[in-house]
Length: 114
Length: 356
Image 1: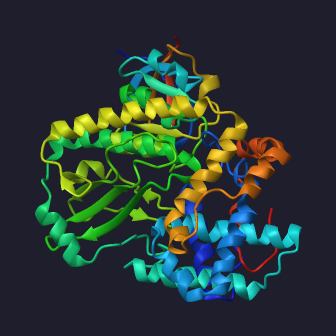
Image 2: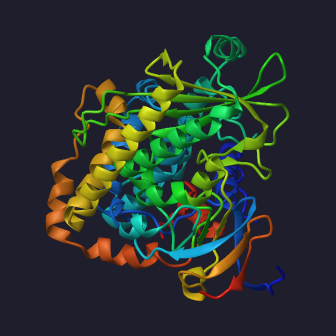
């Protein structure tokens, strides 16, 4: 399968790795239960409240945060790729988009719009 | 590059703060409140109390500080009290000389030097609390699991950390800290993550556990650093070099991995309830709880002086009188761009009058 990747977002790599998965935008931690196993959690910033979703996520992408924010710390220990501080992931991505998260480079590419 | 101080101790202290900020120490986007939203209501009252104790009897002050954790002394005491005293000087006419504030930093550093076996402000990127004998004893006595149980222990670690954030709030999170890296006699690298005060008195959660330690033994060498704010920093993935892992609950070594799973579930459920409770609090209640968490963090210090750690009546009076003035004012700042490192150097330096 050869699909055109389009890099649309960059941020700070917080936990290395590369995965492909469907986006799930979470506006609030109250939506955690809407995230399915192995979806990619995209949100402004995680906090203690997001744990139910983080445990199921294949990767995390956040708008804000640095190398020692909640998302970065938790993702490193769980060994899931994480990019923080993208500024616009929650605006540029939509739930259902198929994306590649390259947390080695800090890049997010859209493979297929949802 | 920040402007250096002529005083080596102050220079080291400011350098340590800059190093931590460069490691990603964020001052924006905290839950459930950000810097300034809560501490504006008590920072001067708290700082004057602490500082007067230092001025009255330096030796007793240092003895009292020994009851606290190095993480609390570094990040929750020194910069906070310096800022609080500068605010009191600028706005309330509190009398204090620059040399007294410098002496305060020096006194805390002297206490840290008694507690820590590495550079006291973590400028050597270590936080060594144990001697070699204690390290070897840990390696010998733990019921170590192999990498096959790494995931289970990782879940416990992140569930505990999130639980701590739900009871101490992001801004403080004094109940979790890392120490190490320790090099063992067999050239392995030991990191220890400690969770303390799990049954915090201030929430009445009836947690049957007080302290949990997680021990991580890595193939050596791994490149890992711990800084002034107790961030753990590593550029490469250290977790794939993890050889063994162990868990200790209130001094008891956990031998069954199913117990770790039970603990993870237990703290996950407690966190969920706690988050709901915190989310239900009004801004006034959050301001007061923030003050309570801050004072409670120093309870052993106050107890050493045979004083109550409870929030002073003056703070309650302010919450009532001032309303949400500072809560709203700092709410805007808490979600805006992070200030420059020079801003923080000026803000936390004892050698100027800048208070933001």
